[in-house]
Amino acid sequence: MPEMSRSQVLVYGAVAVALLFIGARAIRAEGSGAPPVAEAAASPGSGAEGIVLESSGGSLVVDVAGAVRSPGVYSLPEGARVKDAIARAGGPGEGALLEAINRAARIADGQQIVVPEAGPGGAAATIGAASGDGPISLGTATVEQLDTIEGIGPVTAQNIVDFRDEKGGLSSIDQLDEISGIGPATMESLRSRLQP
Image (cartoon, rainbow, N blue to C red; front, side, top):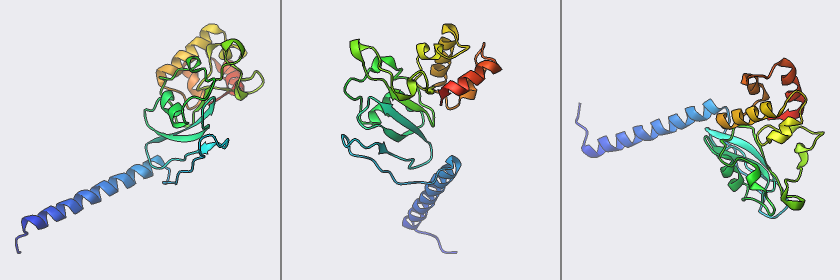
């Protein structure tokens, strides 16, 4: 068998590394269950919601709403924080009340992040799903909002917020079953009043 030259060894090695890299990316994409898709975004200030879909495995998809420049659905990398989602949505909009949310919390796949808007006197204005008759976003619910749910008092409401922040966000209401003091009846109240 003839000996290979050094340049042939380097070429074969580069081809092998490239094939390994492509194979690893394909396996990673299969593991996420999401085929690569194109991105589409509305131009800032157009009034239309920007939509950015997953482009590869290892991403989280979140809905950013409220007082941001370009509300919409965005893909962010694993480990992203609420502040990253707000930045991806064009940054805070005029009148955004950023101190009302935890911008350092990790986000979870499928989470909705609602940036409240300052109302009269600087208080947080009620935004869509945060009103008393609609579901409250689990990702951004305040202690005061959780306290309005039947069977939840201020202590349990604070425990829910602490648990959510400790876990870096929650993707399902069923995860709240891990909190002490939340029984089956309270879980039913939570399911009817909260959305992931």
